[in-house]
Image (cartoon, rainbow, N blue to C red; front, side, top):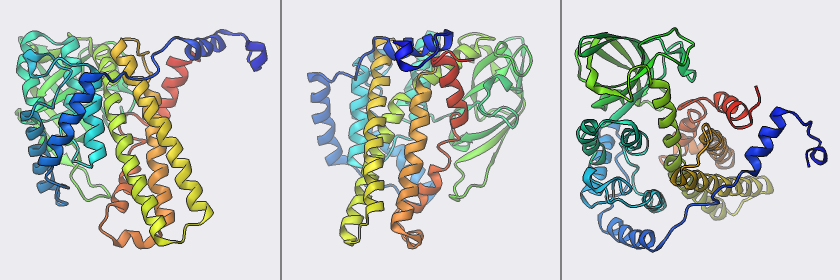
Length: 399
């Protein structure tokens, strides 16, 4: 078989074939319970959707917070979480239904999705019972927003380069250093903060994950200017900030393991939700092209290409969720989702700008906003270059 493919028989090639041929669930199964949930949620959204959030940043944040709180009160948040922590004890497929229906309806996004999709599941896997009781409820109703303190000026997508230090002092850790590109830092109650408690920058060992109160003494937040004109992300400085040892997640010097667990959760539901929202935008673009009556072959080819790409992206998201539910997700596998999302995202809005022309920048319909935002997708949560390295090294076994 290898000879027929023209592939040399070596360790790397064998690793590639093993990845390609391994048994896997094709997609996420939706049963009667999930379809009943879908019917329930569609009816609720029809009666309660407040419409698009305001354009002004502060008012939009308040509207998004109120929207998630309303969804939580109605029982639609954390559906796969245990009942004792505010969930319904359903399957991961139920979470996918919520993501699908919110995106398809055009309803506002969940403001605390970092907590819901990433740190809630990580806490339930690796946290102490006291931590679950303390932190999970505020994630569901958005009363306590979360941010993530990973990137630094000298450690962007390379987490092993983290330099922010934490020294153990009795029953506290004292944190000194700087983080950057921290989304919604100024709004957050808690920061999933990756610090170095041992080893040297460049090493995976010696990292620790601290759940840090963003109102602690010694924290300074400075918003970073961006093209969108919104204070969405910031640099955060820590000057001898004291964090209780009880806020360590997974154990001291176990931060790399915790981070990898979190990254496995980060992209599943998020990529599914985002792919469906991108489908809505593509449908809007197609409608404008039809209405103009001036669709040329290049425009039609671009729309067709993006439609096919979104079909593939959505299928990949369902496959990832199926692996998560089955417990068979390979380390680094979600890098495929992140890389492809960035490519499709940028292709869609770049193509839209070409089709709609420069006058679209004068309209208040979101196309310019989304074009500018799309440029960040290949940078945040790990650059596309880093994702390619992970795919080659961890999935294909090529060093």
